[in-house]
Image 1 (cartoon, one colour):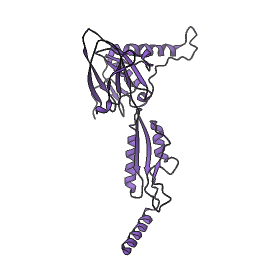
Image 2 (cartoon, rainbow, N blue to C red):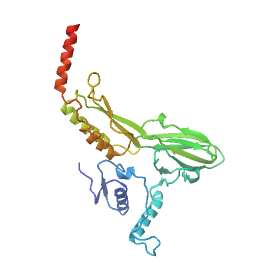
Image 3 (cartoon, rainbow, N blue to C red):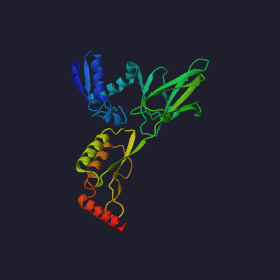
Image 4 (cartoon, rainbow, N blue to C red):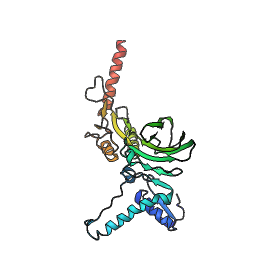
Length: 299
């Protein structure tokens, strides 16, 4: 693929890479950002999004040092980013109505539910003296899983949006509301997903290799909003007492991509999650054929 003419190539589309590309573009340079996955899909999409002020010296000193000055400039830059881009940034903590962020009508707000299951709150004002149509346009990745409740100042839910009614990454819904003060309460449950694969004697060597590649590639796409457990189906059962038909490889669900891939590599302490549990497929097939012939003779 031929890249367009560019002055600067930024490798990595996380917070640092996109931030550098944004300022370079503002300075008039042609910028190309390259990433193996996508914007914010690696560490920047998995962390809690804190802008931490730190220093190599005590903050009580008259001059805490250059690290302090740089991190203070970074924190100040985030405060103006919403005005520059037209997108307001959610500010934590907003887990209670008293901490609610202002939700400005006619503007986008970008935020995330961290940790999954918590409630984030936003306050908004419907102006005028007549009823108005309040429209929410939502985007989610990889799809919308966020529920929204509109409450009055006392916390009583008036209207609600159920994400189970829509599919895809975008949704738009409207409510007819009276003028006044409201709270929008948003939350998102974690997605619990079970990934199961077959390593029984019916799987040939090439099939197992392709399966391993596919599972590893799939786990590379795990999102912070998803929790996984891994199950290996190994056949067995019946007269075969040595083969566990179904083996759960983790004691609990996790979204830790590194841990998931480590279990895939080690098989929870065994020879590997893709090592055939049936170590003598030819002998087993021979025994099965003998049993089938014996059944036929009996019939």
